[in-house]
Image 1 (cartoon, rainbow, N blue to C red):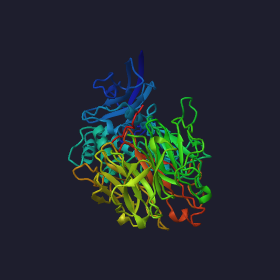
Image 2 (cartoon, rainbow, N blue to C red; image 1 turned 90 degrees about the vertical axis):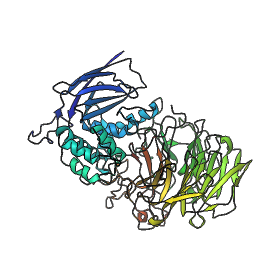
Image 3 (tube, one colour; image 1 turned 180 degrees about the vertical axis):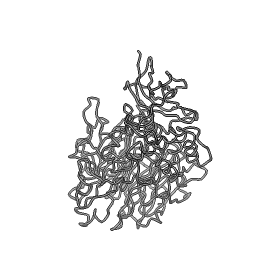
Image 4 (tube, rainbow, N blue to C red; image 1 turned 135 degrees about the vertical axis):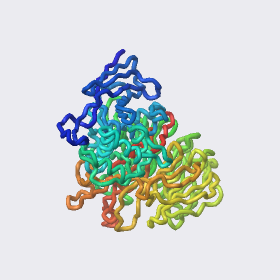
Length: 640
Protein backbone atom coordinates (compact mmCIF):
# COMPACT_ATOMS: atom_id res chain seq x y z
CA UNK A 1 0.00 0.00 0.00
CA UNK A 2 1.39 3.37 -1.00
CA UNK A 3 0.50 6.79 0.34
CA UNK A 4 1.41 10.07 -1.36
CA UNK A 5 1.71 13.24 0.70
CA UNK A 6 1.92 16.64 -0.96
CA UNK A 7 2.94 19.68 1.05
CA UNK A 8 4.55 23.06 1.20
CA UNK A 9 7.10 24.54 3.57
CA UNK A 10 6.49 28.22 4.00
CA UNK A 11 6.90 31.11 6.37
CA UNK A 12 3.57 32.74 7.13
CA UNK A 13 -0.04 31.76 6.89
CA UNK A 14 -1.74 32.60 3.61
CA UNK A 15 -0.42 33.62 0.18
CA UNK A 16 -1.28 37.29 0.45
CA UNK A 17 0.83 40.09 -0.93
CA UNK A 18 3.11 42.02 1.39
CA UNK A 19 5.84 44.61 1.24
CA UNK A 20 9.26 43.04 0.60
CA UNK A 21 10.86 46.15 2.12
CA UNK A 22 10.11 44.72 5.57
CA UNK A 23 11.42 41.15 5.93
CA UNK A 24 8.85 40.45 8.68
CA UNK A 25 5.86 41.80 6.76
CA UNK A 26 5.23 39.56 3.73
CA UNK A 27 2.59 37.11 4.85
CA UNK A 28 3.76 34.28 2.66
CA UNK A 29 7.34 33.23 1.85
CA UNK A 30 8.07 29.77 0.41
CA UNK A 31 11.11 28.12 1.97
CA UNK A 32 12.97 26.63 -0.95
CA UNK A 33 15.53 23.92 -0.38
CA UNK A 34 14.25 22.80 3.02
CA UNK A 35 15.14 19.20 3.86
CA UNK A 36 11.78 17.54 4.55
CA UNK A 37 11.23 14.23 6.33
CA UNK A 38 8.12 12.16 7.00
CA UNK A 39 8.46 10.47 10.38
CA UNK A 40 6.65 8.00 12.58
CA UNK A 41 6.98 8.68 16.31
CA UNK A 42 9.35 6.23 17.93
CA UNK A 43 11.32 5.36 14.79
CA UNK A 44 14.87 6.66 14.46
CA UNK A 45 14.88 6.68 10.67
CA UNK A 46 12.65 8.78 8.45
CA UNK A 47 9.98 6.99 6.41
CA UNK A 48 10.76 9.22 3.44
CA UNK A 49 12.69 12.40 2.78
CA UNK A 50 13.05 14.98 0.05
CA UNK A 51 14.04 18.60 -0.66
CA UNK A 52 11.47 21.34 -1.08
CA UNK A 53 11.39 22.95 -4.50
CA UNK A 54 11.82 26.60 -5.35
CA UNK A 55 8.17 27.23 -4.45
CA UNK A 56 8.50 25.33 -1.15
CA UNK A 57 6.48 22.33 -2.34
CA UNK A 58 7.41 18.72 -1.66
CA UNK A 59 6.13 15.18 -2.15
CA UNK A 60 6.64 12.29 0.24
CA UNK A 61 5.62 8.66 0.14
CA UNK A 62 4.85 6.02 2.73
CA UNK A 63 4.53 2.28 2.22
CA UNK A 64 2.80 -0.20 4.54
CA UNK A 65 1.68 2.60 6.83
CA UNK A 66 -0.34 1.56 9.88
CA UNK A 67 -3.33 2.89 11.81
CA UNK A 68 -1.37 2.89 15.09
CA UNK A 69 1.40 5.14 13.84
CA UNK A 70 1.72 8.80 14.80
CA UNK A 71 3.04 10.69 11.79
CA UNK A 72 4.70 14.07 11.64
CA UNK A 73 6.76 16.08 9.17
CA UNK A 74 10.02 17.90 9.95
CA UNK A 75 11.40 20.57 7.63
CA UNK A 76 15.01 21.64 8.17
CA UNK A 77 15.49 25.03 6.53
CA UNK A 78 18.96 25.45 8.08
CA UNK A 79 20.79 24.22 11.16
CA UNK A 80 19.04 26.91 13.20
CA UNK A 81 15.62 26.94 11.53
CA UNK A 82 13.61 23.74 11.87
CA UNK A 83 9.83 23.61 11.42
CA UNK A 84 7.36 20.77 11.83
CA UNK A 85 3.73 19.72 11.53
CA UNK A 86 1.76 16.87 13.11
CA UNK A 87 -0.37 14.70 10.86
CA UNK A 88 -1.48 12.39 13.65
CA UNK A 89 -2.74 8.85 13.79
CA UNK A 90 -2.73 7.27 10.36
CA UNK A 91 -2.21 9.29 7.21
CA UNK A 92 -5.58 11.01 6.97
CA UNK A 93 -4.56 14.00 4.86
CA UNK A 94 -2.94 14.17 1.44
CA UNK A 95 -1.87 17.82 1.57
CA UNK A 96 -0.23 19.70 4.43
CA UNK A 97 1.43 23.00 5.26
CA UNK A 98 4.53 23.24 7.42
CA UNK A 99 5.02 26.71 8.87
CA UNK A 100 5.61 28.57 12.13
CA UNK A 101 2.08 28.06 13.43
CA UNK A 102 2.06 24.31 12.80
CA UNK A 103 5.40 24.23 14.61
CA UNK A 104 3.94 25.98 17.65
CA UNK A 105 1.04 23.49 17.69
CA UNK A 106 3.34 20.50 17.26
CA UNK A 107 5.82 21.44 19.97
CA UNK A 108 3.16 22.34 22.55
CA UNK A 109 1.08 19.23 21.95
CA UNK A 110 4.08 16.85 21.76
CA UNK A 111 6.23 18.65 24.36
CA UNK A 112 6.39 15.67 26.70
CA UNK A 113 7.52 13.26 23.98
CA UNK A 114 10.68 14.82 22.51
CA UNK A 115 13.91 12.96 23.24
CA UNK A 116 17.40 14.45 23.40
CA UNK A 117 17.75 14.15 19.62
CA UNK A 118 14.46 16.05 19.13
CA UNK A 119 12.75 12.94 17.83
CA UNK A 120 9.26 12.14 19.05
CA UNK A 121 8.82 8.94 21.03
CA UNK A 122 6.67 7.55 23.82
CA UNK A 123 3.60 5.43 24.55
CA UNK A 124 1.28 5.29 21.55
CA UNK A 125 -1.73 6.01 23.74
CA UNK A 126 -0.28 9.32 24.91
CA UNK A 127 0.97 10.23 21.45
CA UNK A 128 -2.51 9.73 20.00
CA UNK A 129 -3.95 12.14 22.55
CA UNK A 130 -1.18 14.66 21.87
CA UNK A 131 -1.96 14.49 18.14
CA UNK A 132 -5.64 15.15 18.88
CA UNK A 133 -4.74 18.13 21.06
CA UNK A 134 -2.63 19.44 18.17
CA UNK A 135 -5.83 19.79 16.12
CA UNK A 136 -7.15 22.23 18.73
CA UNK A 137 -4.33 24.64 17.90
CA UNK A 138 -3.64 24.46 14.15
CA UNK A 139 -5.20 23.08 10.99
CA UNK A 140 -2.42 21.14 9.29
CA UNK A 141 -4.06 21.24 5.84
CA UNK A 142 -4.07 25.03 5.73
CA UNK A 143 -1.35 26.05 8.17
CA UNK A 144 -3.83 28.31 9.91
CA UNK A 145 -5.46 28.38 13.33
CA UNK A 146 -7.93 25.67 14.20
CA UNK A 147 -11.60 26.53 14.52
CA UNK A 148 -11.31 25.63 18.21
CA UNK A 149 -9.02 28.61 18.86
CA UNK A 150 -10.46 30.91 16.21
CA UNK A 151 -14.04 30.60 17.44
CA UNK A 152 -15.80 30.81 20.85
CA UNK A 153 -15.31 29.92 23.62
CA UNK A 154 -11.76 30.92 22.67
CA UNK A 155 -11.27 33.56 19.92
CA UNK A 156 -10.94 36.79 21.92
CA UNK A 157 -12.79 35.44 24.93
CA UNK A 158 -9.37 34.01 25.89
CA UNK A 159 -5.84 34.95 24.88
CA UNK A 160 -4.96 31.50 23.46
CA UNK A 161 -5.68 32.30 19.80
CA UNK A 162 -3.59 35.46 19.88
CA UNK A 163 -0.88 33.83 21.99
CA UNK A 164 -0.40 31.08 19.39
CA UNK A 165 -0.08 33.80 16.72
CA UNK A 166 2.49 35.72 18.77
CA UNK A 167 4.56 32.58 19.22
CA UNK A 168 4.37 31.94 15.48
CA UNK A 169 5.52 35.51 14.85
CA UNK A 170 8.37 34.92 17.29
CA UNK A 171 9.56 31.95 15.24
CA UNK A 172 9.02 33.90 12.04
CA UNK A 173 11.58 36.51 13.10
CA UNK A 174 14.17 33.74 13.24
CA UNK A 175 13.06 32.18 9.95
CA UNK A 176 13.34 35.47 8.08
CA UNK A 177 16.34 36.99 9.86
CA UNK A 178 18.40 33.99 11.00
CA UNK A 179 21.64 35.83 11.71
CA UNK A 180 20.21 38.39 14.13
CA UNK A 181 16.82 37.18 15.29
CA UNK A 182 17.79 33.55 15.86
CA UNK A 183 20.61 34.56 18.16
CA UNK A 184 18.25 36.77 20.14
CA UNK A 185 15.64 34.01 20.28
CA UNK A 186 18.13 31.43 21.53
CA UNK A 187 19.42 33.83 24.19
CA UNK A 188 15.87 34.52 25.40
CA UNK A 189 14.94 30.83 25.53
CA UNK A 190 18.05 29.53 27.26
CA UNK A 191 16.95 27.19 30.04
CA UNK A 192 17.34 28.19 33.72
CA UNK A 193 20.24 25.71 33.91
CA UNK A 194 22.03 27.54 31.10
CA UNK A 195 21.35 25.23 28.15
CA UNK A 196 21.07 27.42 25.03
CA UNK A 197 18.92 26.12 22.17
CA UNK A 198 20.57 25.26 18.89
CA UNK A 199 17.45 25.54 16.73
CA UNK A 200 13.86 26.70 16.71
CA UNK A 201 12.42 23.38 17.95
CA UNK A 202 14.66 23.48 21.03
CA UNK A 203 13.78 27.12 21.57
CA UNK A 204 10.05 26.44 21.46
CA UNK A 205 10.46 23.42 23.75
CA UNK A 206 12.17 25.62 26.32
CA UNK A 207 9.26 28.04 26.15
CA UNK A 208 6.80 25.21 26.87
CA UNK A 209 8.95 23.81 29.68
CA UNK A 210 9.77 27.18 31.28
CA UNK A 211 6.83 29.36 30.25
CA UNK A 212 7.45 32.02 32.92
CA UNK A 213 11.09 32.50 31.91
CA UNK A 214 12.01 35.78 30.11
CA UNK A 215 8.36 36.51 29.29
CA UNK A 216 8.99 40.20 28.60
CA UNK A 217 11.96 39.63 26.27
CA UNK A 218 10.13 36.95 24.29
CA UNK A 219 7.07 39.18 23.99
CA UNK A 220 9.20 42.04 22.70
CA UNK A 221 10.75 39.92 19.96
CA UNK A 222 7.33 38.53 18.97
CA UNK A 223 6.12 42.09 18.43
CA UNK A 224 8.75 42.58 15.72
CA UNK A 225 6.69 40.50 13.28
CA UNK A 226 3.09 41.12 12.28
CA UNK A 227 2.25 38.25 9.96
CA UNK A 228 0.11 35.92 12.05
CA UNK A 229 -2.88 37.99 13.04
CA UNK A 230 -4.22 39.00 15.45
CA UNK A 231 -1.30 38.84 17.92
CA UNK A 232 -1.37 39.50 21.64
CA UNK A 233 -1.99 43.09 22.64
CA UNK A 234 -0.91 42.49 26.23
CA UNK A 235 2.07 40.69 27.64
CA UNK A 236 1.03 37.34 29.14
CA UNK A 237 1.80 36.15 32.66
CA UNK A 238 3.51 33.14 31.14
CA UNK A 239 3.72 31.47 27.73
CA UNK A 240 1.26 28.73 28.60
CA UNK A 241 -1.21 27.80 25.89
CA UNK A 242 -4.60 26.92 27.37
CA UNK A 243 -7.61 25.76 25.36
CA UNK A 244 -11.10 26.34 26.74
CA UNK A 245 -13.94 23.94 25.85
CA UNK A 246 -17.59 24.31 26.90
CA UNK A 247 -19.67 22.24 24.49
CA UNK A 248 -21.52 19.57 26.49
CA UNK A 249 -23.16 18.18 23.38
CA UNK A 250 -26.54 19.82 24.04
CA UNK A 251 -27.15 23.52 24.69
CA UNK A 252 -30.27 22.61 26.64
CA UNK A 253 -27.94 20.84 29.10
CA UNK A 254 -24.86 23.03 29.20
CA UNK A 255 -21.88 22.98 31.51
CA UNK A 256 -22.96 24.31 34.89
CA UNK A 257 -20.29 23.88 37.52
CA UNK A 258 -18.17 20.87 36.46
CA UNK A 259 -16.77 19.44 39.70
CA UNK A 260 -14.05 16.93 38.89
CA UNK A 261 -12.56 14.78 36.12
CA UNK A 262 -11.43 11.23 35.61
CA UNK A 263 -10.11 9.65 32.41
CA UNK A 264 -11.18 6.25 31.13
CA UNK A 265 -9.04 3.78 29.20
CA UNK A 266 -9.91 5.55 25.95
CA UNK A 267 -8.66 8.90 27.28
CA UNK A 268 -12.19 10.32 27.54
CA UNK A 269 -12.99 12.75 30.35
CA UNK A 270 -15.91 11.93 32.69
CA UNK A 271 -17.13 15.10 34.38
CA UNK A 272 -19.82 15.41 37.07
CA UNK A 273 -21.85 18.59 36.61
CA UNK A 274 -23.39 20.58 39.47
CA UNK A 275 -26.30 22.72 38.31
CA UNK A 276 -28.52 23.89 35.50
CA UNK A 277 -26.51 26.71 33.94
CA UNK A 278 -27.75 30.07 35.15
CA UNK A 279 -29.61 28.57 38.11
CA UNK A 280 -28.63 27.19 41.53
CA UNK A 281 -30.62 23.97 41.12
CA UNK A 282 -29.26 20.47 40.64
CA UNK A 283 -28.98 19.23 37.08
CA UNK A 284 -29.60 15.60 36.16
CA UNK A 285 -26.74 15.10 33.73
CA UNK A 286 -22.99 14.58 33.60
CA UNK A 287 -20.63 15.31 30.70
CA UNK A 288 -18.34 13.06 28.66
CA UNK A 289 -15.65 14.61 26.45
CA UNK A 290 -13.31 12.92 24.01
CA UNK A 291 -9.52 13.28 24.44
CA UNK A 292 -9.54 16.55 22.49
CA UNK A 293 -12.27 18.06 24.70
CA UNK A 294 -15.20 17.62 22.33
CA UNK A 295 -18.48 15.88 23.18
CA UNK A 296 -17.82 12.15 23.02
CA UNK A 297 -19.51 9.92 20.46
CA UNK A 298 -20.05 6.18 20.49
CA UNK A 299 -19.01 3.59 17.94
CA UNK A 300 -22.16 4.43 15.97
CA UNK A 301 -21.08 8.12 15.98
CA UNK A 302 -24.07 9.09 18.10
CA UNK A 303 -23.46 11.61 20.85
CA UNK A 304 -22.87 10.15 24.30
CA UNK A 305 -22.77 13.51 26.04
CA UNK A 306 -24.45 14.83 28.05
CA UNK A 307 -25.11 11.69 30.11
CA UNK A 308 -28.49 11.18 31.76
CA UNK A 309 -30.08 8.42 33.79
CA UNK A 310 -28.75 6.29 36.60
CA UNK A 311 -30.02 8.68 39.24
CA UNK A 312 -27.52 11.41 38.33
CA UNK A 313 -28.36 14.64 40.12
CA UNK A 314 -26.14 17.54 41.18
CA UNK A 315 -22.77 15.85 40.80
CA UNK A 316 -19.91 17.34 42.80
CA UNK A 317 -16.35 16.23 43.52
CA UNK A 318 -16.98 12.50 43.13
CA UNK A 319 -16.06 10.47 40.03
CA UNK A 320 -14.00 7.28 39.67
CA UNK A 321 -13.68 4.20 37.44
CA UNK A 322 -13.09 0.64 38.66
CA UNK A 323 -11.24 -2.27 37.05
CA UNK A 324 -14.45 -3.48 35.38
CA UNK A 325 -14.80 -0.11 33.63
CA UNK A 326 -17.76 0.86 35.76
CA UNK A 327 -18.00 4.61 36.29
CA UNK A 328 -18.99 5.81 39.77
CA UNK A 329 -20.48 9.27 40.24
CA UNK A 330 -21.18 10.87 43.60
CA UNK A 331 -24.41 12.91 43.71
CA UNK A 332 -24.35 16.00 45.91
CA UNK A 333 -27.31 18.23 45.06
CA UNK A 334 -27.72 22.00 45.00
CA UNK A 335 -30.39 24.63 45.59
CA UNK A 336 -31.94 23.43 48.85
CA UNK A 337 -33.27 20.18 50.27
CA UNK A 338 -35.85 19.78 47.50
CA UNK A 339 -32.96 19.32 45.05
CA UNK A 340 -30.78 16.97 47.11
CA UNK A 341 -30.31 13.53 45.54
CA UNK A 342 -32.65 10.74 46.68
CA UNK A 343 -29.81 8.33 45.85
CA UNK A 344 -26.26 9.48 46.41
CA UNK A 345 -24.42 7.15 43.97
CA UNK A 346 -24.80 6.60 40.23
CA UNK A 347 -23.10 3.76 38.37
CA UNK A 348 -22.64 3.59 34.60
CA UNK A 349 -21.04 1.48 31.90
CA UNK A 350 -18.40 3.07 29.67
CA UNK A 351 -21.02 3.40 26.95
CA UNK A 352 -22.98 5.57 29.47
CA UNK A 353 -25.66 2.91 30.07
CA UNK A 354 -26.85 3.12 33.70
CA UNK A 355 -26.09 0.00 35.71
CA UNK A 356 -28.54 1.03 38.42
CA UNK A 357 -31.45 2.92 36.78
CA UNK A 358 -32.24 5.10 39.80
CA UNK A 359 -28.87 5.11 41.59
CA UNK A 360 -28.04 3.62 44.97
CA UNK A 361 -27.66 4.95 48.49
CA UNK A 362 -25.43 4.71 51.53
CA UNK A 363 -25.16 8.26 52.86
CA UNK A 364 -26.37 11.80 52.33
CA UNK A 365 -24.77 14.04 49.66
CA UNK A 366 -21.50 12.60 48.37
CA UNK A 367 -18.30 14.49 47.56
CA UNK A 368 -15.03 12.52 47.26
CA UNK A 369 -15.38 9.22 45.37
CA UNK A 370 -12.40 6.92 44.81
CA UNK A 371 -11.72 3.28 43.92
CA UNK A 372 -9.11 1.10 45.59
CA UNK A 373 -7.40 -0.40 42.50
CA UNK A 374 -6.31 -3.52 44.41
CA UNK A 375 -9.77 -4.54 45.63
CA UNK A 376 -12.33 -2.47 43.69
CA UNK A 377 -13.70 -1.18 46.99
CA UNK A 378 -15.42 2.13 46.20
CA UNK A 379 -15.07 4.79 48.89
CA UNK A 380 -17.47 7.72 49.29
CA UNK A 381 -17.39 10.84 51.45
CA UNK A 382 -20.88 11.36 52.93
CA UNK A 383 -20.67 15.12 53.32
CA UNK A 384 -24.14 15.72 54.78
CA UNK A 385 -24.40 12.46 56.75
CA UNK A 386 -20.98 13.01 58.39
CA UNK A 387 -19.89 9.51 57.40
CA UNK A 388 -17.56 7.62 55.10
CA UNK A 389 -18.94 4.51 53.42
CA UNK A 390 -17.52 1.86 51.12
CA UNK A 391 -19.14 -0.39 48.55
CA UNK A 392 -17.05 -3.49 49.18
CA UNK A 393 -15.84 -4.79 45.81
CA UNK A 394 -18.33 -2.42 44.22
CA UNK A 395 -21.42 -3.97 45.82
CA UNK A 396 -24.11 -1.53 46.96
CA UNK A 397 -25.56 -4.27 49.18
CA UNK A 398 -22.29 -4.96 51.00
CA UNK A 399 -21.44 -1.65 52.61
CA UNK A 400 -18.87 -0.75 55.29
CA UNK A 401 -19.27 2.50 57.24
CA UNK A 402 -17.37 4.94 59.38
CA UNK A 403 -19.74 6.97 61.54
CA UNK A 404 -18.11 8.97 64.36
CA UNK A 405 -21.54 10.35 65.34
CA UNK A 406 -20.13 13.84 65.12
CA UNK A 407 -21.78 16.58 63.08
CA UNK A 408 -18.44 18.38 63.04
CA UNK A 409 -17.03 15.57 60.91
CA UNK A 410 -17.66 16.73 57.33
CA UNK A 411 -15.67 14.49 54.95
CA UNK A 412 -14.67 15.84 51.55
CA UNK A 413 -11.60 14.28 49.89
CA UNK A 414 -10.40 10.67 49.97
CA UNK A 415 -7.16 9.04 48.84
CA UNK A 416 -6.31 5.33 49.02
CA UNK A 417 -2.88 4.19 50.19
CA UNK A 418 -1.07 1.14 48.82
CA UNK A 419 -2.08 -0.87 51.91
CA UNK A 420 -5.77 -0.26 51.25
CA UNK A 421 -6.24 2.27 54.02
CA UNK A 422 -7.78 5.65 53.28
CA UNK A 423 -6.83 9.20 54.16
CA UNK A 424 -9.89 11.45 54.44
CA UNK A 425 -10.09 15.22 54.81
CA UNK A 426 -12.57 16.94 57.12
CA UNK A 427 -13.52 20.26 55.56
CA UNK A 428 -15.31 22.00 58.46
CA UNK A 429 -13.01 24.88 59.52
CA UNK A 430 -13.65 24.42 63.25
CA UNK A 431 -12.76 20.73 62.98
CA UNK A 432 -10.16 20.74 60.19
CA UNK A 433 -8.32 17.44 60.24
CA UNK A 434 -6.93 14.53 58.27
CA UNK A 435 -8.26 11.10 59.27
CA UNK A 436 -6.68 7.71 58.57
CA UNK A 437 -9.20 4.86 58.15
CA UNK A 438 -9.16 1.12 57.54
CA UNK A 439 -11.88 -1.42 56.75
CA UNK A 440 -12.69 -4.04 59.40
CA UNK A 441 -15.54 -6.21 58.18
CA UNK A 442 -18.53 -3.91 57.75
CA UNK A 443 -16.97 -1.32 60.01
CA UNK A 444 -14.43 1.32 59.13
CA UNK A 445 -12.12 2.15 62.01
CA UNK A 446 -9.71 5.05 62.54
CA UNK A 447 -5.99 4.36 62.70
CA UNK A 448 -4.59 6.53 65.46
CA UNK A 449 -6.00 9.94 66.27
CA UNK A 450 -7.16 12.45 63.66
CA UNK A 451 -4.44 14.89 62.63
CA UNK A 452 -5.66 18.40 63.52
CA UNK A 453 -4.33 20.44 60.60
CA UNK A 454 -5.49 22.82 57.90
CA UNK A 455 -8.49 25.07 57.45
CA UNK A 456 -11.14 24.25 54.85
CA UNK A 457 -9.52 20.95 53.88
CA UNK A 458 -10.44 19.73 50.41
CA UNK A 459 -8.55 17.42 48.05
CA UNK A 460 -6.02 14.78 49.07
CA UNK A 461 -3.75 12.61 46.89
CA UNK A 462 -1.04 10.02 47.51
CA UNK A 463 2.06 9.80 45.33
CA UNK A 464 3.91 6.72 44.08
CA UNK A 465 6.14 6.68 47.18
CA UNK A 466 3.21 6.87 49.60
CA UNK A 467 3.55 10.56 50.48
CA UNK A 468 0.27 12.35 51.16
CA UNK A 469 -0.62 15.81 49.86
CA UNK A 470 -3.62 17.69 51.28
CA UNK A 471 -5.18 20.99 50.16
CA UNK A 472 -6.15 23.44 52.91
CA UNK A 473 -8.07 26.44 51.61
CA UNK A 474 -8.64 29.62 53.57
CA UNK A 475 -10.47 32.87 53.02
CA UNK A 476 -7.13 34.55 53.67
CA UNK A 477 -4.68 33.96 50.84
CA UNK A 478 -1.69 34.04 53.20
CA UNK A 479 -3.08 30.97 54.98
CA UNK A 480 -3.68 28.87 51.87
CA UNK A 481 -1.44 25.82 52.08
CA UNK A 482 -0.79 22.39 50.67
CA UNK A 483 0.43 20.04 53.39
CA UNK A 484 2.82 17.16 52.83
CA UNK A 485 2.83 14.07 55.06
CA UNK A 486 4.90 10.91 55.07
CA UNK A 487 3.04 7.63 54.61
CA UNK A 488 2.68 7.27 58.40
CA UNK A 489 1.04 10.68 58.73
CA UNK A 490 4.11 12.55 59.96
CA UNK A 491 3.98 16.08 58.60
CA UNK A 492 6.86 16.87 56.26
CA UNK A 493 5.96 20.43 55.36
CA UNK A 494 3.37 23.01 54.44
CA UNK A 495 3.80 24.98 51.22
CA UNK A 496 2.38 28.10 49.62
CA UNK A 497 3.14 30.33 46.64
CA UNK A 498 2.98 29.58 42.92
CA UNK A 499 -0.20 31.64 42.61
CA UNK A 500 -2.11 29.28 44.87
CA UNK A 501 -5.27 30.78 46.39
CA UNK A 502 -8.05 28.67 47.81
CA UNK A 503 -6.63 25.23 46.88
CA UNK A 504 -9.31 22.60 46.35
CA UNK A 505 -8.46 19.93 43.78
CA UNK A 506 -5.09 18.19 43.66
CA UNK A 507 -3.60 16.06 40.89
CA UNK A 508 -0.26 14.31 40.49
CA UNK A 509 1.49 14.04 37.15
CA UNK A 510 3.65 11.15 35.97
CA UNK A 511 6.67 12.48 37.89
CA UNK A 512 4.63 13.04 41.09
CA UNK A 513 4.66 16.81 40.67
CA UNK A 514 1.60 18.34 42.33
CA UNK A 515 -0.92 20.43 40.40
CA UNK A 516 -3.46 22.50 42.31
CA UNK A 517 -6.87 23.83 41.30
CA UNK A 518 -7.69 27.13 43.00
CA UNK A 519 -11.11 28.29 44.11
CA UNK A 520 -10.14 31.66 45.56
CA UNK A 521 -11.78 33.32 48.54
CA UNK A 522 -15.42 32.72 49.44
CA UNK A 523 -15.72 36.11 51.12
CA UNK A 524 -18.57 38.28 49.73
CA UNK A 525 -17.18 40.91 47.39
CA UNK A 526 -14.40 38.70 46.09
CA UNK A 527 -14.01 38.40 42.32
CA UNK A 528 -11.52 35.68 41.45
CA UNK A 529 -9.54 35.10 38.27
CA UNK A 530 -8.72 31.42 37.96
CA UNK A 531 -5.20 30.10 37.97
CA UNK A 532 -3.32 26.81 38.09
CA UNK A 533 -0.53 26.24 40.62
CA UNK A 534 2.18 23.57 40.59
CA UNK A 535 4.75 22.24 43.08
CA UNK A 536 7.78 19.97 42.85
CA UNK A 537 7.33 16.34 43.83
CA UNK A 538 7.66 15.07 47.39
CA UNK A 539 10.39 12.76 46.11
CA UNK A 540 12.44 15.59 44.59
CA UNK A 541 15.57 17.05 46.15
CA UNK A 542 13.60 20.15 47.16
CA UNK A 543 9.94 19.15 47.55
CA UNK A 544 7.06 21.59 47.55
CA UNK A 545 8.75 24.35 45.59
CA UNK A 546 6.52 26.30 43.19
CA UNK A 547 6.67 25.26 39.55
CA UNK A 548 4.43 28.20 38.64
CA UNK A 549 5.04 31.96 38.96
CA UNK A 550 3.39 34.14 41.59
CA UNK A 551 0.46 34.67 39.22
CA UNK A 552 0.00 30.95 38.69
CA UNK A 553 -0.68 29.79 35.16
CA UNK A 554 -3.61 31.82 33.90
CA UNK A 555 -5.94 32.19 30.93
CA UNK A 556 -6.64 35.91 30.49
CA UNK A 557 -9.26 37.48 28.27
CA UNK A 558 -8.24 39.09 24.98
CA UNK A 559 -11.04 41.62 25.26
CA UNK A 560 -14.31 39.87 24.53
CA UNK A 561 -16.76 38.97 27.32
CA UNK A 562 -17.23 35.34 28.30
CA UNK A 563 -20.22 33.68 26.71
CA UNK A 564 -21.80 30.30 27.29
CA UNK A 565 -22.08 27.61 24.64
CA UNK A 566 -25.45 29.08 23.61
CA UNK A 567 -23.73 32.49 23.16
CA UNK A 568 -25.45 34.11 26.16
CA UNK A 569 -23.27 36.16 28.50
CA UNK A 570 -21.93 34.30 31.52
CA UNK A 571 -24.29 35.96 33.98
CA UNK A 572 -27.03 36.41 31.42
CA UNK A 573 -26.94 40.21 31.63
CA UNK A 574 -25.91 42.43 28.75
CA UNK A 575 -25.28 45.14 31.35
CA UNK A 576 -22.87 42.94 33.31
CA UNK A 577 -20.28 41.31 31.02
CA UNK A 578 -17.52 39.20 32.55
CA UNK A 579 -13.98 38.99 31.18
CA UNK A 580 -12.69 36.02 33.22
CA UNK A 581 -12.65 32.83 31.08
CA UNK A 582 -10.85 30.70 33.70
CA UNK A 583 -12.96 30.57 36.83
CA UNK A 584 -12.95 29.09 40.31
CA UNK A 585 -11.44 25.61 40.00
CA UNK A 586 -12.26 22.49 41.98
CA UNK A 587 -11.15 19.25 40.34
CA UNK A 588 -8.36 18.79 37.81
CA UNK A 589 -6.45 15.92 36.22
CA UNK A 590 -3.40 15.26 34.01
CA UNK A 591 -3.98 13.27 30.84
CA UNK A 592 -1.77 10.84 28.95
CA UNK A 593 -0.16 13.62 26.88
CA UNK A 594 0.70 15.89 29.81
CA UNK A 595 -2.24 18.26 29.36
CA UNK A 596 -3.76 19.55 32.61
CA UNK A 597 -7.57 19.69 32.54
CA UNK A 598 -9.13 22.08 35.06
CA UNK A 599 -12.81 22.51 35.99
CA UNK A 600 -14.44 25.94 35.77
CA UNK A 601 -16.62 24.99 38.72
CA UNK A 602 -17.82 28.33 40.07
CA UNK A 603 -18.26 31.74 38.50
CA UNK A 604 -15.88 34.57 39.40
CA UNK A 605 -18.09 37.00 41.33
CA UNK A 606 -18.87 35.60 44.75
CA UNK A 607 -21.26 38.43 45.63
CA UNK A 608 -23.19 38.00 42.39
CA UNK A 609 -23.43 34.29 43.02
CA UNK A 610 -25.05 34.81 46.41
CA UNK A 611 -26.85 38.11 45.98
CA UNK A 612 -30.09 36.43 47.10
CA UNK A 613 -28.69 34.53 50.05
CA UNK A 614 -27.57 31.59 47.99
CA UNK A 615 -31.09 30.46 47.13
CA UNK A 616 -31.25 31.88 43.61
CA UNK A 617 -27.62 32.58 42.88
CA UNK A 618 -25.95 31.81 39.55
CA UNK A 619 -22.85 30.00 40.64
CA UNK A 620 -22.22 27.27 38.06
CA UNK A 621 -18.99 27.86 36.18
CA UNK A 622 -18.59 27.34 32.46
CA UNK A 623 -16.49 24.65 30.84
CA UNK A 624 -13.04 23.12 31.07
CA UNK A 625 -9.66 24.85 30.62
CA UNK A 626 -6.87 22.61 29.27
CA UNK A 627 -3.23 23.68 29.71
CA UNK A 628 -1.40 22.03 26.84
CA UNK A 629 1.77 19.99 27.31
CA UNK A 630 2.94 21.35 30.67
CA UNK A 631 2.93 18.20 32.86
CA UNK A 632 4.44 14.73 32.81
CA UNK A 633 1.85 12.39 31.25
CA UNK A 634 -0.31 9.97 33.25
CA UNK A 635 -1.44 6.88 31.34
CA UNK A 636 -4.81 5.51 32.54
CA UNK A 637 -4.84 1.95 33.78
CA UNK A 638 -5.82 -0.42 30.97
CA UNK A 639 -5.35 2.28 28.32
CA UNK A 640 -6.75 1.08 25.01
